Image 1 (tube, rainbow, N blue to C red):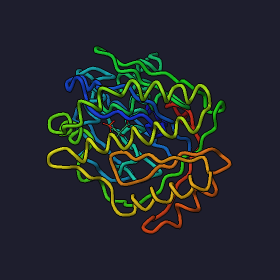
Image 2 (image 1 turned 30 degrees about the horizontal axis):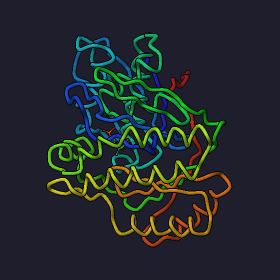
Image 3 (image 1 turned 90 degrees about the horizontal axis):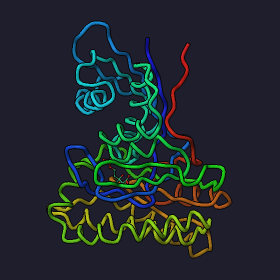
Length: 320
Ligand code: PMV
């Protein structure tokens, strides 16, 4: 039997950057994100009767470089004594380019593997397992606006606002399609060890999260916008001041920020955020989406845009 699951990437508005426990991959800080709808990863998992090593195909090509992380994730779900697995992954957006493809991949993987095992673990348990492979993946088990609380021993994850209760739109401006030069995992360790800003990043995270949560509860877009941009720029400041520095931006990234600033000056409800890559994500209210998409589309260096509403958490896909 083969089990299939689908998950969407999520975009953090209050970022996860840094780990408190490297062995268990526990985040140093809590975070808040939006789960997308129209970008997706589908994972199919089949445990073989016979032994043999795991296999992985990503978008119809063998992917040996990613196999180790996938096998580790399957160990977390099924135990180390599990049989070998054949895993097939398919995404409808560029992977490894700062679009949170590892979040959707590992969220879909844990759901597919659990189904293949016939297990009954719910989203929180599966989020904790996905988080063992990619900290941000834990959030993609849930839909809408999602908060991840970082504890000393484990994380908690929950939806704090359903999609329908605040229908935000996200426009992604693609400014490069190459895989990122430094993985987020490696970049985080470097930041923890070398950035003089890392300690102050940790210190103010709970304040930022509280402000963002208030913005969500009150549907106060301006409040959420201000704290999300501030938090994103702080995370990038940690990256920039790591030794050696990590700068994921390119000139088109900066042009997109100028575009968003110009839209804001015109009174449009929109803000930017960026992750471990050069893509810019603009979050806006639905009435501004068409103008934001067209302005980003026409920004120098932008190769294309993708638009998404907020969507549900990872779930099994029924097959014949
Ligand atoms: O889950 P990881 O290890 O790929 O780290 C993701 C980190 C950021 O995307 C930059 C921020 C976040 O909270 O998603």
